[in-house]
Image (cartoon, rainbow, N blue to C red):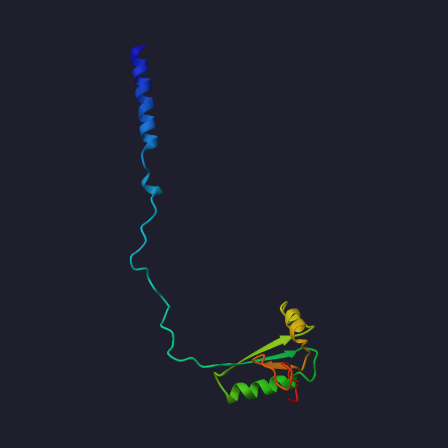
Length: 129
């Protein structure tokens, strides 16, 4: 009977000792001293300002083609210095953000904006301006 108690106590103590030992897998991995850097370059010494052309259009709009012609003239005259964005209204290409743009600027097909800067007391320019 005594030997059974001794064996039981030894088994219990060995279980406690094993369960209390520190598991090496719980240690966080050491941070690399020099993490790899890929695709990151120094910022340029100078920046060039781009012109943002935003125009409002719709697939059903017959006069909206004028905006595309004027956009192409600007993009070809100043290559790399302008960015053009078309906002479609009431057609399959309308984006959800259009409603916010419309509420902010009261947009209308055949209207556009240049850098969202006011000109002639309005941010929106019509096709004759």
